[in-house]
Amino acid sequence: MIREWRLFLVALQFLTRFPTPSLPGLPDDWLVRSAKYFPLVGALVGGVSALVFLGAHALWPAGPLPALLALAAGILMTGALHEDGLADTADALGGHSPEQRRAIMKDPRLGTYGALALGLVLAAKAGALTVLAVRFAAWGLVGAHVGGRAAAAWAMSLLPYAAEPATSRLNAPRRTLRSWELALTLALALAPCLIAMGPAGLACAGGAALAASLLAWISAKRIGGHTGDVLGAVEQAYEVAFLLILSALGAAGRLA
Image (cartoon, rainbow, N blue to C red):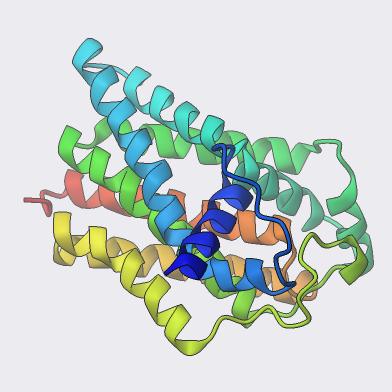
């Protein structure tokens, strides 16, 4: 149990800005082993974002402010980790070769493609949350964050690492989760969908998984596999697709 708790803390430390105790002397593969808890970190970030949404909605029952504040809370908790990956990946995909695309990813400057992708994704998420009923918007934040982290863990396991190993924060020679670990991330991703939304939640998770898989496939073709930025972009693809599908189902009267 102590080992698993430390693995969770590794995941929390890696994905968020929450203060965590020092964890010295960790083996090289601890970050990989901690990836099975990425969805639990997503549940924490999504849960706090949902509480911010509910509190803001009590003050401003109409308009986009609750959605914007909830998204801002998520960004503050993670230090814009995934959003930065989305922007860098969007910029990189505009390159002419895998080598050039990987070089673009290392450039700290924000390009046109990255700025447009970041703005459009944030606007789409805010718009989707604004048109949803309050309960489903709150649960949607939880489901999107949990599933997005699970999608990143799957992409890390199924795609080869594309960047130079020396530039990675991860020293483990193998970046693949075990079968039972992948199954755990999948179960954690589906749990909030089934609890709060039933079949509609499964539809959101399935559609979002397809969107994340498409981006992962494009990255494999154009970049050569995954990098940390690609994993952030995959997470964001899942989030925005989940919320867009959920809002479409709500507009169609498919949410009870």
